[in-house]
Image (tube, rainbow, N blue to C red; front, side, top):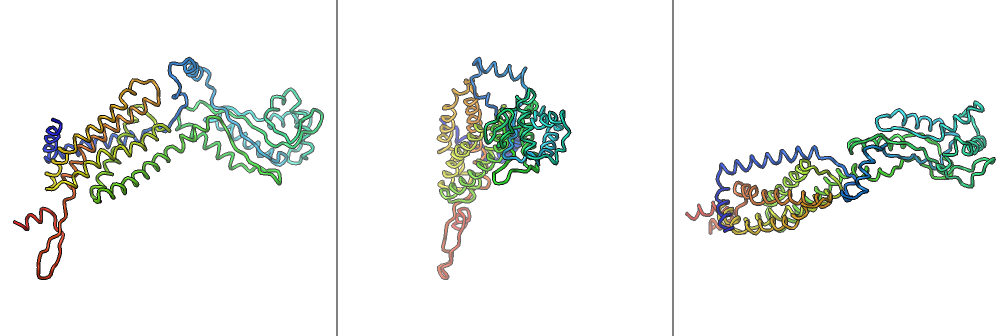
Length: 411
């Protein structure tokens, strides 16, 4: 019965009106896929991985809604010559404080230190000596105003009250981001912080590796959001190239290989685009699944193309025979793949739901392009067999003719 149904489908697909309709539907789906892909967000939140019914999950979302003060970060100053760099640190902190759209607040020890020293005297900060700085720093850190900043220093020795502070190895300036809603906001914010710290003209102590760099716990996730877009296009692109040459080796037909890889590429675009309509984002989970999808999508098309090449006859006859013989097997393969993931649709886990949604789209669009679009393409422009015949026994010339031309010659 399945073979009979595919035989009817194949005879239906070789009609010109149906082929035009298939092309229009495919272009419509491709357009929707491109639109969805351009609006697909690159975002990942760790809270998506926790149990949605756990008490800690409810606490987390309530805390984020009512007590969300933004991501806290630190600027690490390693082996800095503070005597020469106090003015540059002023510029750094002032720049952060003026960027109110992404920086909510800055808590800098060095500004509080300068205010503390200026209350007793009016030093010329451009001409202070290292000994003066270390003496005043020790007094500041042991004062009520500066005691809270002790934990933000790492010295070369023990800090003792009444004695100059040892050489400062590392110090920290705290800052806090505002409430950034998505990757389109926090990735530029992180890039801006990195750019400002990298371009600061900070002086370092001689004979030691110095550096100024920002660090925040959430930056690890923000960096993933930043690079995931480049990585996904690079990985899918390299996978398509590898699959094209692999298919070319086994099919030995450039035209069929191009048609197969075209179907695979369009399927991936539509899957990624409809992820947007289904509420998914580009993250580590969905990107890995999309790369796997390239290997799954090729199965739906390559079997049809291989059977088409191995079947004699003209294009129409080859399409009818191909769908009748191999179409049911391709359909069963796609349907069994879908059955393997169907139970994930009832899950509340973000990981399992992502797998189900993406694999569902892969099976639906993969079967559509393998069993509908590719046969139409083959019926219109599929390769035909090439045969060699001896035209003249006198000069022994050989010519390559198509099946249609050879049949006409025999007639």
